[in-house]
Image 1 (cartoon, rainbow, N blue to C red):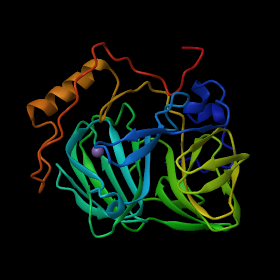
Image 2: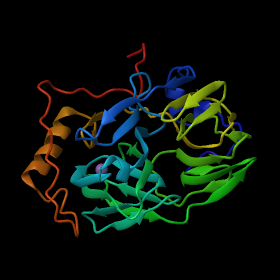
Image 3: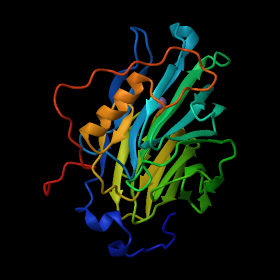
Length: 329
Ligand code: MN
C-alpha cells in the first residue's frame, strides 16, 4: 500500500523516477465555480489546476462552505442521479449531513468525521442530497483517478464511520485514505496514496511526517494556516512537491487541514464532466450510454428524481493531459 521506509530509494519506488524534478512549492489559488442558480452555492476548486493537475492520484478538489443554508434561502447540495467512470469519489464533511444513494445499492448518510467512498470503475450512477436536519453545510468533494489496471473494475461503495485517528504533536489526524503517521485507513485504494484531515488547535504548531516518494498538497479548510513557509487561506491548496520527510504546520486561530499525497501519477488523463478517461472516444461512449439510459450505469436505487442530463460535448476532439505541463512533452 504505501512505502514504510523512512528513506526509500527513489529509483525503485515508481512514479517519481519517471518524472522530472518536482515542480516548486506553490500555493494554488482556487477558482470560484457556481453550482447552479443565481443564489446557488459556490465552490472553491483547486484541482485540476492549470499548474498542477493532480497530486498523486487526487485529480479533483472542491471546497464548499461553511454556508448557513437557511440564511441564504438555499436547499444546499441537491445533486440528482448522475454517472461516473474511472475514478473514486470521496465525500468529506466538516458540518452538515449528506445522503448518498447509488446504482449498486449503496446508501449512507455521511456526517463530519466519516467518509463516503465510491469506486466508479467502469460505471456507476449516484445521487447526493444535503439533509435539512442541520442548516449549515461545509465540506470537501474529492476525486481519485483509478490507474489503468483498475479503471474498468466493477463499481462498489464504502461508508467509513470509524476512521483511524492519531495524535501528531499538537494536532489530531483522521486518516481517510492510505497511511498517515502510522495509522492505516481501511478504505480501498488503487495507487500509493494518502488523505488525512488534520485538526490544528489555536496556537498549535506541529511537524507532520511525509513520505519521500510521495508528492503532497495541503488544503486549508477555514481561516488561515502556516504550511511550510506559506500563509495559506481557506480554500487554497499549498503544493509541497516530493522528496520531503516532513512539513511544519501552524495556525494562530486553529484550523482544519486536509493533507493529500501520493506517488506522482505517470498516466495522462482526460477529464470531462463526471468522467475520468484516457481518450475522446471513451468519453463519447460513456456520455452516450448515460443519455441512452443503457445498463452500464444502472438506476440509482431508491431515488426517483429525474436524472441529471449530460452537457453537450465540445466541438473539437478532447486530448488527454499529463499531470502537469512539462517541457519534455
Ligand atoms: Mn458525483
